[in-house]
Image (cartoon, rainbow over the protein chains, first blue to last red):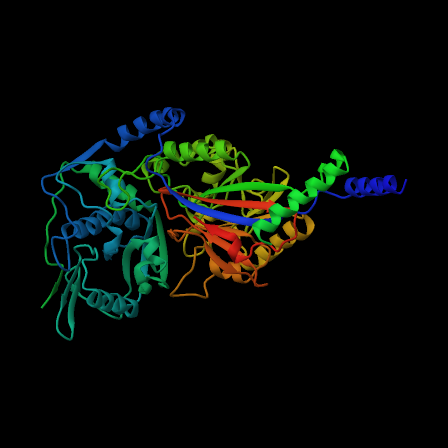
Length: 248
Length: 305
């Protein structure tokens, strides 16, 4: 009898208890490289029509360049840096002028933002994506003379081919500099309108002089869109080094 | 508790019950469970494998191969969760042309269970996320983005509880600060809330109210910022919270060969993992459970293969 009560009690306890609490007793971890797995056909079949459509668009020829446009063919400038700043300026200035009645003084971007050279031959939509894969937007910043001074010191200290447009001509001397913008000597009392990207305005690449400008004018123009528009309207692209930034 | 003890006790218990001819009581014998977590982060629209001439990842990645890997694990252990820590979007023209449609469709085919929202998910604006939701058969979880004044209101939940083989698993998401990283025009009225405070709320809900057996955080905060250690990161999050078992990270594109084992605010172990970028790796964590209260998560019980 005693035995049965025990069994009953045990059964009662078992069934009245909730699911027993779980405790982690062991953990294992591993990393798998995605390389040698056999691709699943049902996935390839879904991807194929998208890939075909995309490749067709990406391979659309916009223009032509007789020479490779490189990031590395100069020291303080490069043909790709110059092209980048000049084409964005050319595309953005009419928009800005139309909205504000003012001209942009010059354009400036960052060297590391040039993501890929353009090989000689046809230039495609894909080239524009490779050059500018990000969804950055063009902004015009009203910069004080003080911030301009920081910008100049940044260029002098960096010694890299950061893209600046042709209006900006800087001669770096041993302990000083000469700067003209649109052939007019730099005036520290003037406000300058500088074209750049939202990324750099936010302090990207430590261009902190763009961080708190007098004014930010958003022209609602994506950087890549301006590149594609420029390529689309040109029969061919010519670039050159013109000594816009030089050091003595 | 050593494994030897574990086996000995199980055998003894079974023997005793058999002797008493009480097969009905076989139920209370020690239960064991095995849950597998597979995870990715920062896949960045890399649908196709990299070309053989790619400077860093030649021939690596590709969704159809990742799917094959996931299937093989699923066949081995159907009790699994497939999770992503954000930045599924942006990085190849697939995103520029199709806005994330293919990324979400393929993730749904792979049977992803949940993903969190990375900063690049906003690249076509908050409306761009909403537009792609019909293609996602998995949940987007984000606890520290308050979407209540946006089009995503009610579409994104702070957490989701999965019941896998009667193991209750709570998964919540955390996103990175958007200001300065994403154009305000893109994220609109999304409000970024403090990730640490929100994580403390989440673990209270998931542990104390919901009694989850396992808590996983999908974080797009970044692993750790050496130059600015005060910036919130996965390692900071781990040390300032409790009851999180695993943080699956993203954003910093950190390639960890194995998960980092770190301590939470109570001195208990937390695993932090991240598998780089572009879908060139997948991470796997296996949790084994039993009903013995043999203190869990001791460092020596964590075996890294």
